[in-house]
Image (cartoon, rainbow, N blue to C red; front, top):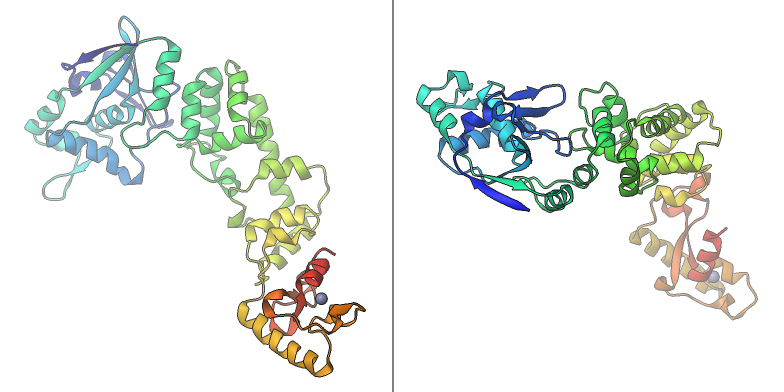
Length: 389
Ligand SMILES: [Zn+2]
């Protein structure tokens, strides 16, 4: 890859003809139209999030004369460049110069670019940037791009994949899944965690449709001119979940709905019954893992492991052990009730506390509480045998 260092391009040059697309959250062009600020493999603009702290910091650095770091352009043709690294900083500059956000002056007053003193405006516009113009093959540039971080905010996994597999498929996918103006985002957010800007909906949709093989899927669909399969599959999963579980619970967010859809979407559920069961389980104080409730119900309410039902604490075990053992010693029988009714040598064996485990007399699934009254200590062998039934 060939690189040339440019030191004479100013903020004014860069911001000439700057266009910011509010809808897509992207800085688009600069340098009098010669520069594409956000090629399709770039991520959305994220410096405006968190109250805009990062974009304000870019402007304050410039006003203080601090460097804002190296910027890399990819030379596409004689007079055309794309931003390889520096897109967030350039967009901050462009947005400020076009009055899209304000900074605080020394008196704490918010000031837009058009409202600050002329000398400060000049200082910003005349600041020269350090820019490397790179020329290389697509794969060289992408390989290099894969290894860099942009201004302290590392690319996440999906952003890297978008860069590596850039093309019409990524562009269309981002229009659907990475567009924070998409009216479906609120509904999706019930089931999918993350944000459109950081590509987390796209990542989820790809993960579901590809059964976890996102890279392979993106590679083989790279040049597709439509995203029908991706969209249809994603919507099928969302529609399925929202029809089976009619209540919205915060623990639904981020579950493996794609896997659950594959496993259970052919089974028939009565949404009213499901809803009643969800409510009952949500009201059960012994359930530690509420996230497991949905898969538990889908699987026919059998696998209680998913719920992490609360176990007996040590104090309960000790007191139950003491009472049980005292009674057993009086009778000359084993302190494990199952051993006591047996015929082998263990029928009069007194087990030590650490040789026994606590068992629900009435199973939790049949309404048994995790309390002293419902606790019985059994020897480990019998406890295990009972647990497996
Ligand atoms: Zn036993």
